[in-house]
Length: 106
Image (cartoon, rainbow, N blue to C red; front, side, top):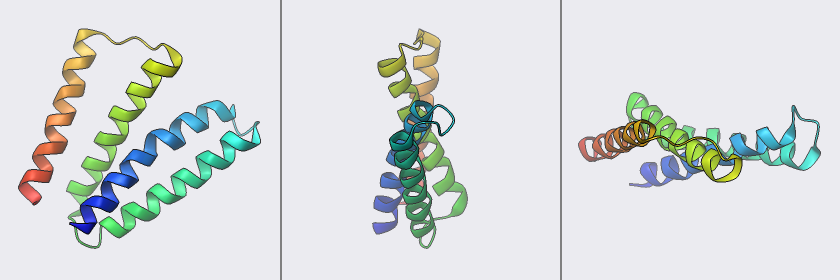
């Protein structure tokens, strides 16, 4: 169970570092750069802790899936990126895959 908690927190940090990276403008601005580096490091560290008890394929797929969903949602909210019905369908499919992997791995 602790592995799943580490994994979910690690995955939720992915949108944080991705969005901060965008705001850093190629590491031109210090605080977004610091946030991005810290959040990425924390995300990788927590992923490594999760991998002690979870299969690597499952953990990586869940980490990327949750991170991708978070980044897409943040992009829509913060940068007015397009959200089409097709994009929503594929986001739902990613979510179904993430939940399915958690169910089968327990």
